[in-house]
Image 1 (spheres, rainbow, N blue to C red):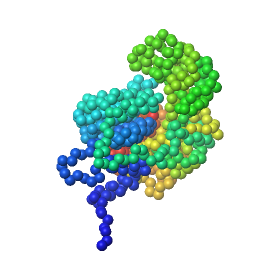
Image 2 (tube, one colour):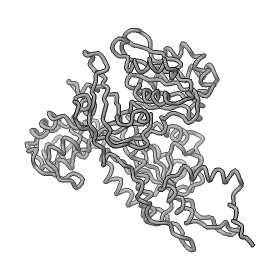
Image 3 (cartoon, rainbow, N blue to C red):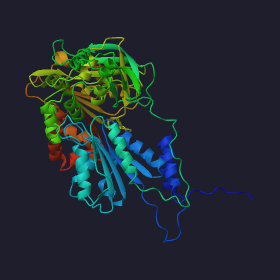
Image 4 (cartoon, one colour):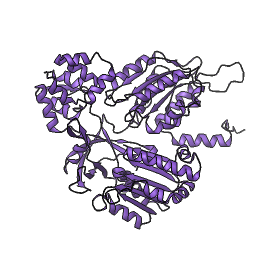
Length: 580
């Protein structure tokens, strides 16, 4: 008698879904799923009296730079080591009403800009803050908030989540932790306290999953382990006399960066300018050759200041440090004031202002430890690696801003624009799945302001390789046609090849009174028709101008197609933003 294989205990549609899911999982995700399932009953109970296993702790993150996702994964790993079952999810994929079925929630979120939630989690944020949010009387929660104290509305997204969860009936596990850009140690301390409050899985009669995920699939490069590449080309794309020039950079890729697609970015680890480093050393009366340690790495002080420390913004931690070093009465008094007053003072005083106005001679190591870490800057990849796999292209605009009675330059843009062929650059990949091309052949409407054209250049290269191309409409704005038509030849070639079905441009100085929205409003029927056909709409570039454009398009589209038409685009994941 031949034994027959036991069929899977799923219906055909369920089994199809299971197989589809498993095909999308990497080794780490399969491990987590196997451990999660092993920690629950292996066969469904046949008695009504059997108590269901408790929900795993839900760890939700909201991020634009990936820091919160990494912290969420680190928390999950620590929980696994402590026998605590977890589920990690992007808040962009979570609906507030799902929280009513949860027992424990941990939110790790950043605040973007001056008080905005990260763009991907806008829907979750609005839902939780709205009148339709569920009551959460059975939920225990904790919030870790990341932010930048140089902004007035520091960590406000995390603060709002924390207050709202309590207002909806939730019970706080531990106090919220607000973290500045030097978040790693405060976050570790907070996680250690939180672990003591989270429920361990009931392992009676059940198998324990492995304590740690396999280490075969860590990211190849990150901001702590960057890839060093060489500059091939640094070309000015705009007028020679433009106050804020725009450059095209080509970097040599001798090592492949896997899974970096059009729409993704790279984090650039910029160096501080030598003059600024020298000014800090002079003000502190320190030698650049003095040895210091940064992240267990011994190096000269000048290297630490040039590559690892923010020499522009002085955070509240540095304010306290400098008050102690200088013993300046004004600073000592300020350190006793509320944090809002301290941040207001620091918005009007950069690091050198403090060093010159309240002189002191600090120890080299203490200075390095007090300074904020120098943050990477994200730049969209301007080419498709599937077309050209040994080069990485970037589009960079000089950033200037007024400060007190002077004008300052952005650290990263000044660094990149000054690079020469042969110079090294440290970088790492930053995946941006929400801004990639869709999997289907739906029409594409690409709206770019200035350097927002960069990812669309990569889109066009990728689309040029497809035999079946979706209809594509590009709307682009810059200053002057003659001097500022970025990547004009690439765009013209894409139009000639049929990759672009339509191109509309706006040049502000050539067309007084026109805005980026003008060609779209002039063709509102065409825009509505494309959207009716399932078009995905992309917005990339200056946040202020594109936010104004979005507001105008929402009004126009809702008037043409009915209230809620614009919001429906977001619900259907057909509205993609990449704003800065």
